Length: 146
Image (tube, rainbow, N blue to C red; front, side, top):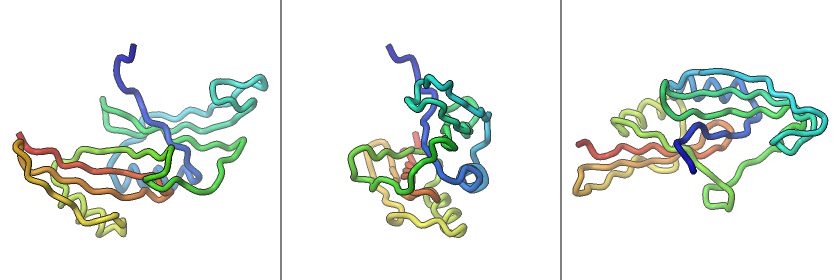
């Protein structure tokens, strides 16, 4: 069956701007890029002749995000609300949620709420949501310190 996670793919409109957000704002690194062209008969995308740029960003030896830019057929505008069927989010663990919140807020990033903290038997836990520049939902969790 399943052995481990490899990556999470999200379809993007502006590959350069969204890469800048994940790399310069969040501190991920570009790991690799692939120019993928499906044969006229089609491939796993279900789009015969699809042309995509696949850019993988991540943290070394960790889960990656595949930023998928469809050139043909082009992607459609819009995104899903976080409570809408089919919506997804990417969750990052952080050491200090308040510092992340303050740093990203100073860069103009808008959050759904201020950080929310809960005291648990394991310690203090924090959580917060935001959207990346194209509307994809991101969650940041500060796990209890052990």
